[in-house]
Length: 121
Image (cartoon, rainbow, N blue to C red; front, side, top):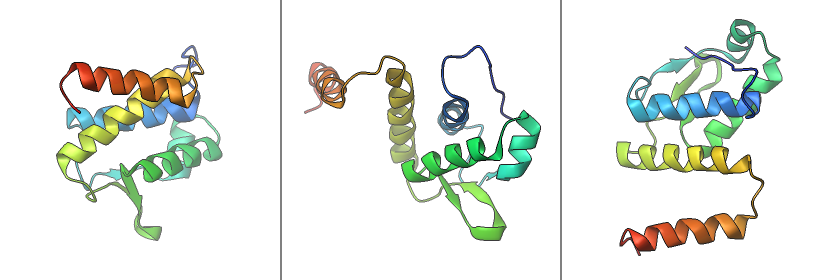
């Protein structure tokens, strides 16, 4: 389900986050889809469990996934599809711009200008 590109400049946990966001966006991960356990995915990808846990924490914070204790981790039903798509796009933007280490105010100004140019006030 997931792959890690060791040559990718993104951190491993960010690659996982990006792949989940893309899966939600393209429909390959639908609401209610169960994700692998932290240990299971770590073993599959041959990475540290803490790396997967960090990705899952970020994804849960963004609202894309929800963890239900021993039942597992699932793609969240907490948002409607438009909100999920917006959240996924925002997460992808954050992951991409992090490479350039911009200041938050700079990112916000660029996004605000792009929204203005599209007529979204």
